[in-house]
Length: 257
Ligand SMILES: C[S@@+](CC[C@H](N)C(=O)[O-])C[C@H]1O[C@@H](n2cnc3c(N)ncnc32)[C@H](O)[C@@H]1O
Image (cartoon, rainbow, N blue to C red; front, side, top):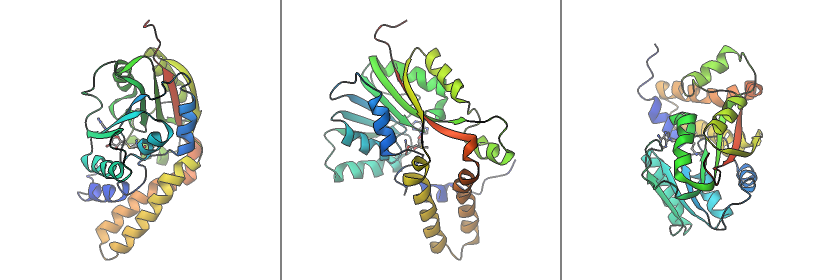
């Protein structure tokens, strides 16, 4: 097994924490997903799981008049979100806390909407859906994004790209089955367009890597790690036909089965 460079994570976070988002997503996709929650309360209690630095948390705060609890296990990301929340005067509606979504401390049945972009897979989609079902009140919604394979037999380069981060990645049908098996009723789903990969994620990532290349111009080890990080947007340019990010929206039925 190849031993990761000990400085890899230092540079990973130097790149990722400075992006508006740590995964694909944009405001118009969030608005479309929110529109699929047709019976949502006027001021919903929202839980944002794996919020990262909170790009989508802040958009949700603009698009709803609800309260938001945003959770992430990475403390520096939560600190960034807290600074943005304070700067925008949103602290009466948005709280950001360090936590593990596999073991949430929130009360069962206490949320009208659980939001999660690109994060549930970290604890296994089926496990995450079970956790979310418990945290939602009957009639509450879950809106989440997940990477799915679009074609069988992707080139080995693409498969290897996902192997370390998401080895269990399935197809669209696998996720739809997981949602239904978990007791939810699917209210809609859509594939996120290419802009959702670039606007707030890969374009700022490529710019940030270029900035760090200048900063570490005389550090060969740093440059090698930055080259490695640059492979992800490049892989997407070449092979995006093979995988997609899907936005799923589903409702916990009013009556449990
Ligand atoms: C791909 S990022 C997505 C961040 C953000 N939702 C976005 O779309 O920009 C996944 C996030 O999940 C967080 N995460 C991973 N495992 C977690 C866990 N068990 N509990 C809470 N957060 C977790 C990571 O720290 C990371 O910020």
